[in-house]
Image 1 (tube, rainbow, N blue to C red):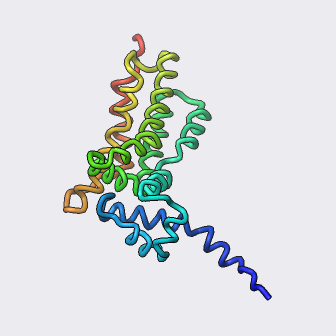
Image 2 (tube, rainbow, N blue to C red):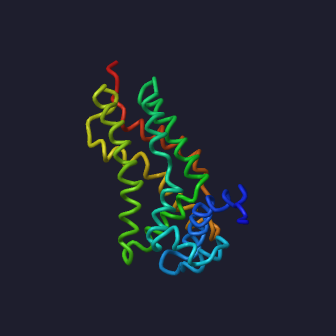
Length: 211
């Protein structure tokens, strides 16, 4: 008589891809993409090398899954922006700290460090990162800024350049956390950085009201 699989085993099998992705993230962050071996990832996940290939074709497929795991939920951010009833300054003051919290609680900076360090030899990593996160985030922010310009809240100028300026300090803060804080540099509070930068950026972006 055949023995049926228990619910516990079925749950374990369903969780396996997520466990492999978590292991890949840890190994990529520690060793970089080039030095990371599928054997290392399998050992970290507690599975065989063959089990990794059952779910992921190669290391690049694993990296795509890692990016999807750590990237902020842009659809949720877009929905929050669409539901916002106030003005553009209020939106910036809400979204930048939210991005800082999300990034600070994830390994987003570790993945960015891998991309920056290895994109020359593995340009596909940069393309994955750009298409999955950077381009989408920049397009979202630029669209919000363009609409604020149409309402007369934001000065004339390239919305994409404004968007770049809004998010750049947070990216630098993440890189600082991953690169310099581990060797003794004084850390930055990402949430405080986001709040301060929001005020600085708005000071330069907003149109001045006539006296």
